[in-house]
Each structure stands twice: as structure tokens, then as C-alpha cells.
Length: 229
Image 1 (spheres, one colour):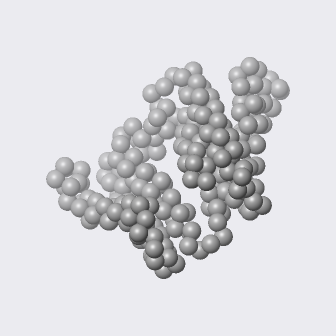
Image 2: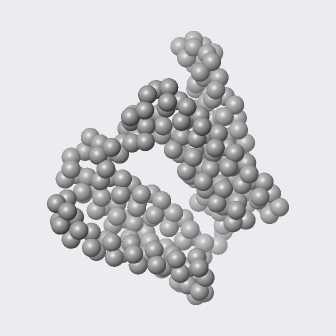
Image 3: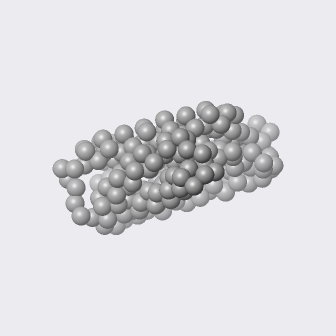
């Protein structure tokens, strides 16, 4: 089951999302690429997403149930395959003509609910309150912390047109959200289970929270010393 979580997370949270953003002119990873290179990167990353998702699903078949998590995850894999099959036809037809336009819109309209099913599957992976920390920590570290770090880069897509002072404000705000979400997640975990800190997962998570809080406290001092404030 742990292999299933790892593979599906890499496939749908890493490869698929990055592949989608490859066509955005404000995405840092594709800003310097030529249109042809963006198409190749998009195709390659989405193929990786489908392959990782398929293998992850195979590992989970033995323990698959009729839960919302399982059904939405399975539907996500099916739609991903369909999207991947429709995608290449966009480049083989004139996008201005009827059939090419239909392929392009179909590709997008299938991809959007696929991504929504990913979020649904991750969010509703369990009906137990003690597992809600997974969602909270995912939002904290995979969204707020990651975007907070990228906000200081001048080649990061959404922060490129922002002034330096506004990047600092965004960085502080996003990192504050990281700490708050992490604290809420740890509080939820400590209230519902006592043995979490005895495992490698629990100890590494607790250490991550301590380091996150330390970096947040030391952040203003370090930024002033580096002339970033």
C-alpha cells in the first residue's frame, strides 16, 4: 500500500501537475523553453504520470474497496489514459478546423475533471479523523511551503512580474500559513493518537515541524542580513 501511495503521488501530484503547467507562459520551468520543447515536456511528463498511476493502481488492486478514495482514484486513472490518447491527436490536426478544435477541447475537458478527481481522492483517502493530518500537512508543505520558497525567485512564473518587496510579503505570508497548517496537523495528530512519535514517520514529521518553526522565526533575521528586507 505504501508503494501505491508513493507511485500515485509522484504520478498525479508531481508529473501531471508539472506537465499541465508546461504550457503556461508564467510557469518558471517553461518560461525559457521554445513552443516545441514545451510540447515535448508536456507529452513526456503526462506519459510518466499515466505510467506511475497505472503501476500504483496495480499495487493497490488487492486492497481496493468501494470507498470514495478508491473509486475516484480509479476513475482518475481511466480518464488519464483517455486524455493521453486524445492528446497527441491535437498536434496531428489543424487546431483551427472543426476536428482539430474538437480534439483540443475534448483533451482539456477530460483533463479538468481528471485533476479534480485527483484532489478528491487525496482529500478523502480515509474516513478516520486521525488521518486528517495527511491532508493538512500536504497543504502545508507541498503547497504553502513550496510556493513560499519559489516566491523569492525572479524566474518563478507567478512572482516574476511582482516587485521585490511584494515577493517578500508573499514569502512571509505563505510561510506563516505553512507553520499554522503544520501546527494544526500536529495538534490533530497528537489528540487522536499517542504513538505517532514512536515511529520513523512520526519522528521525521515532528522534526520537520520543529525545523519549519525555527526557519520561520529566524527568517526575518536572515533576510535582513542578506539584504532581502
